[in-house]
Length: 400
Image (cartoon, rainbow, N blue to C red; front, side, top):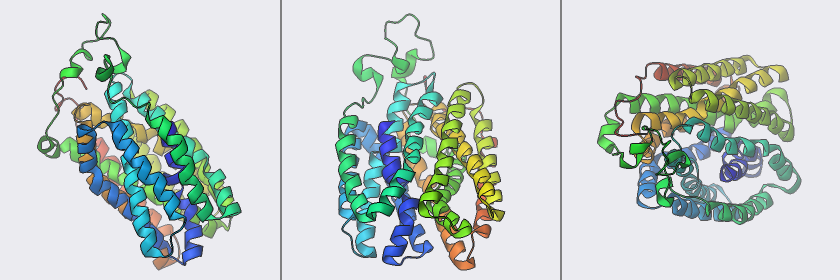
């Protein structure tokens, strides 16, 4: 959770706060900013299958450490770049590092360690991302006070100093330390039959996963959700500044409201996800995403932006932990890294299209209304994908 918080504050949720400073310093348009962010998402998608293989071939801890070095070192170098070409090269290196030490690596460890309370465990890990988002106003203040270059250099140094000892605590799976999922002892008479065969679980092949309707429906629903999340993360501060005329610090504070509601959504999603049908919960989250985008089409006041922020943040939190938990439910924990790795190729599409669509349409029309309408349509299609998912169980070989 602490690793996620660091990465969220300094990188994942920081992009939209850095964006106005880059636009002012380099003279870039919103489309250019969107393309840079899309490059990160494209890299993450293309790296996915390789990332999944690395996690299977090497321990997640080693993969995380390699990513930390690239991300932290990249931050330091970023503070010295001059021009678009240098920026793109350094940001690409940082993106690779962020992917290797980020979501997939950490979730692979969580999936290996938890079975009965998987949704709750994933929600707790996701809280790290939310906690990092709560610190975004602090980052905005630092950027306004000291400038983006010193802050980038300092971020790299702080990240390396804090993340290194945290990475040493990662243990790939419970079997490597003589335990079973959920921390149970192998000789514990209370071990349930569902957990007992977990060590003998036979993972799916990539071909089997790619041929299943479950893989594609989950990926499409998740990809469409990320189109909305990515677009809001990149453009929210810019949108609030231009629509309401507020400063960067105030706009970042409004973004923090999204994070607060995301935390509430994660708590609800983690609790309900272990008790109710995750398909309906995910579809409900998509419905709230859509409602938020519809509000932003006509938003002209702080109150309307607040309403959209509450809906979007809660939907993000509610749906977020379910995405990984559902893949583990459908395909098993031994195939999780592989399935997520290949899924990233589809997730990349939404992550790239969302922010880029917003930037292009806003630059072309001079407003964000039409772009938010298109995002609402994308969200509705994603919700439908979750609704038509069959029940899990067809591809499980042993306990998940």
